[in-house]
Image (cartoon, rainbow, N blue to C red):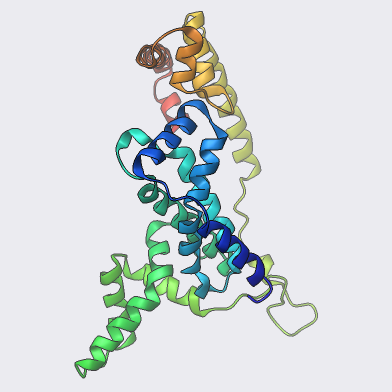
Length: 292
């Protein structure tokens, strides 16, 4: 921690000097970024709430991650929040950003807690960050009442408190109490002992499954290509720009280009999908199985 203390201190001082935004200014900056991609507005919005990101990052230092890394992840969460924030919803940006900042930090902590992934579902995250605290409180309350809880009772109470299945508590307890070891370590002390990595099941597709998958994808592409020919030129263009690009276009940008309203673009897109769906229905359950 000492090595990154100077840099952390500098970032904290810079964040504390940033401007404080009132609701009206915040809204103006949010609109400027969303509608015009005004990078100066985005910069002001991010800087103004960096102190919030640093404050939230500090709460996760007990997990052993470097503070600089936590702040960096908090900053990434803040930028995601700014990019996805919709000022029309009538909530303050700070309220919206808190969720994204926390999610970004938690994902980082869990990725780096162990070489073995700890878990990514909402229940696993809730357990990872709350189990020890809930367990300590339950034990204190039991002690105050003169009660003695066995391991099973304690796990059941934790599961009920956090709102997760008992098996998740048992799994997380084992992972948090365990230590990492090399998968290249041998299972015995003999020189020719098998390595642990050799016991892992190959999760990749088998050869026959790969052939079947390639066949299905080829058929699906052909059917989708046929469905696209049922559309007029404008509908094909809208579908391509909205669904087939690596960076899909927004309804607003297409509306501006085609000189149509956002709602009209949405209607044309829906109509195009309906035409394609009707054509694909000719293939019956085959398409449904491939798209499942």
